[in-house]
Image (cartoon, rainbow, N blue to C red; front, side, top):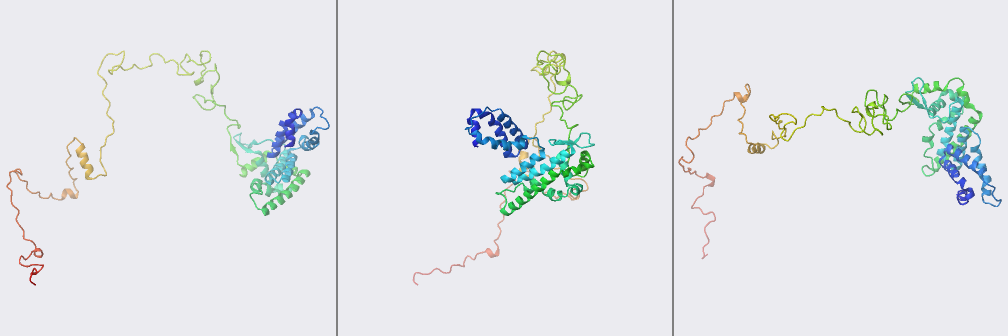
Length: 413
């Protein structure tokens, strides 16, 4: 913070402020490429500074800054830079990042031994015609996991089982997430692995793995053994041109006349007919452009007038009205007799007679019950008859001479 504040305050040191921030951010997030670029920019602008007085405060930081930038300015391999970053992360207590840098240092050294660029991410699967791709570093991880690699480099039997899944093994090893015992164990493992990896890189023992077989053959073997999962690609792994059209179609990939193009290149349909300046108006052939273009004469049907007759035609009977398709309630269910009564009250049609029973059913074989004779005269003309009195039951008959309450008390006694 002090040196950054000095770069901002002093106008002569302002050119160092931006590159130094880039260098510091690379150190904070562990990005080797950002560290290298920032260090080289700081060194370049530091050499172009005018001579500062001996009493200037920058003279105190200048030797320290020079020693800090020196490892990243010199021409060093990627594996060595990643090894330095791992050691720096161990000093700061960042064990997850240290384990990841140790793993990447081994992978980068194997790629250099095979002659594969270390910044290459994807590669085509051999014998796939460019339709499948795999990650390059996943192939290297498969190589280091093989029995042949452990036979040629015995230290891999200790190193690779711990670093193969470094993110899962040490990804949450922090002072806030694990106990002190587990943190001490992880720290001991990382420090031990750092020494082993440094010895392997220094002795160039991984170069013995690439002596007999090519990298493409090992990549094909990794895919065949299902150790690496390829991804499907289109063609050579290239995305189709944006807005491309199919041949003979109005949309899709490939074909002629594809996509939206600039003015003057034709429009939809792949035609490219003559249009006005800017290509906005309709084409002379009626296609493409913005809008439908002109409709050929005679294609539009004649319009109808208000009376139903067509224009430019003689009179005639109006067309028959179309069938009314308004939905109506035809059945009433779930209300029983109430529903039947409502349907009969709301319906203008007479009630239908019950359907005759089908032949062979019990209802058809059973004789109809004898109905009572209906009077031939109306109800007003029939004489009224008195109802016959009936005697009450025996248990309800009362004895008029028997007083239930007993004799009434006399006033004398």
